Image 1 (cartoon, rainbow, N blue to C red):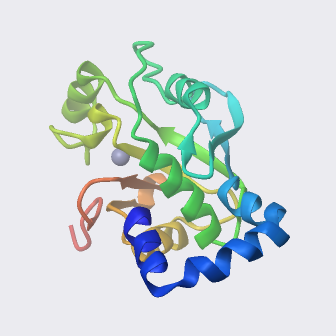
Image 2: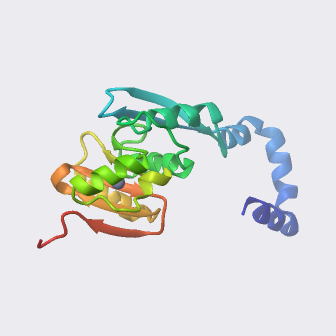
Length: 189
Ligand SMILES: [Zn+2]
């Protein structure tokens, strides 16, 4: 997309205008491409906190991704998994969308190993057989000081992926799959 946009700029001659401006304001050009994206997470099961810059500009920091994978691992069986970095962007955007940019996010569930997912599917309501948690593509969260409904509505407005609303357990499931929504237990049940 960026490549396409820049070629259009060259064609329309905007680049000729931009180049002298970049020479005059190099710091401004650098700051937009060097924007830092950070998350402030608290894992409700392990009691651990993680405040981390996971991305600078369009570059996801490998060391930060490793720490996040570990932080969001399956605490029941002590297994980590590659988490989809788009999830981190989703959390970052969600924080902004509820008016708490950079604010703390409580993690209810990150990665779930197949055995843990099977156990929860058997013993708990609202756990899918083929959960996206097993792929590292989903996360369940709360945002302190923001109602579960408000978090759900903000996630829906983002149109980023799936959004599950679990009002009885006070959390929202978000994932990077196709855009869809559900509530558990279903209304009227
Ligand atoms: Zn979930």
